[in-house]
Image 1 (cartoon, helix red, strand yellow):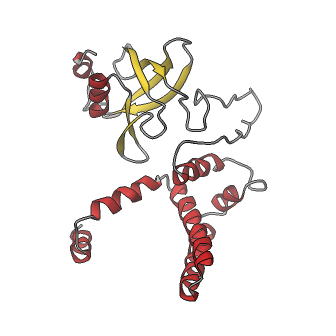
Image 2 (cartoon, helix red, strand yellow):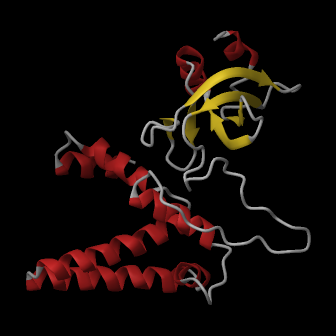
Length: 227
């Protein structure tokens, strides 16, 4: 695919280019995402859609985990050169919920959007929980535990994290493996809720842990103090 497209975009003004992915055969709109310059370069070089995740702050190849790759057939810039439309051959489905398109929540005029039914996802549990938290921000707290945590505010939500951390510590002290696993799951769940409330994807934590590989504890602590 032509790399002339890279030179057409003012990356200084638009470091993240909005991208609409559309099915090449049916013309169905599949998803909306962003590309930075490197993601678009990889897309053009490989013919497979690459994007930039704002929540994870990293490049990602669509379908790298699930196998649901997007093979780019055509690409179009809009009249202002600040939005890209790509027509793709979609392997499998486009949406992380298991649906073909991310645009499945019909919003009727004067009616509230309906809660989508969950389907099996090909992504990690942490990623799934993060997306559930994002959806529950606008859910009825009477019907959703996550929504109730979010709507009670930071103090109540973070109090649960502290409580679960304490219970995890006591379980470790008692040495009962099943209890340790159970309490660790509770702690991780409430931690992901808190991260989701602040729009921080759990993958950012994985990236930070990966950054620390090769650093001694003293070096890592000194690097934080330097900032």
